[in-house]
Length: 168
Image 1 (tube, rainbow, N blue to C red):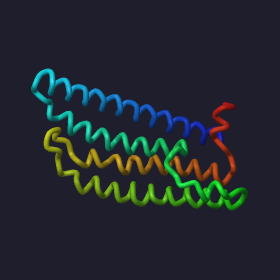
Image 2 (image 1 turned 180 degrees about the vertical axis):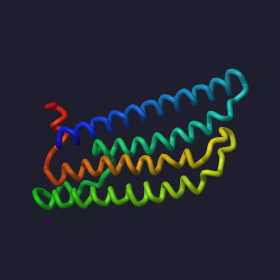
Image 3 (image 1 turned 180 degrees about the horizontal axis):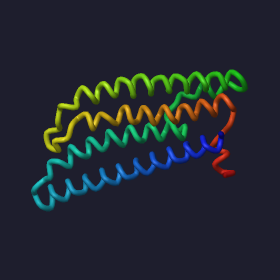
């Protein structure tokens, strides 16, 4: 069982890290194109600004899913670090459960409704549906939910899959 969970975790982190890197490279290329066309050719490309804005949204959501998967997200750790043993375990289960509920309820459920509601609105320069742009919220919510289920498994069983990565 742990072997399969570790495989899912590794695959999730690989996909998310590569996707974030690809989006970051794409944004950098678009900004370079914008700067070169504006200052060198005196003819700015209008679509690049809008595309970079949408890619930034997607990068932020992908980065958030990656951060939750690797447990490197921002956190207030004052109370968590003060606790040990069973209270620490219960607090981690509570925190990861709340994050899972938020990912499923707000990001996935409400994000899906938002994306569907703006499906008929199109961006002015690219002409793509805003629903496609906003679809990243529910996609990210599902990815965060998967990461949180794995995190809850680690919390409940006391298994640290990160240590298993080094052994495997």
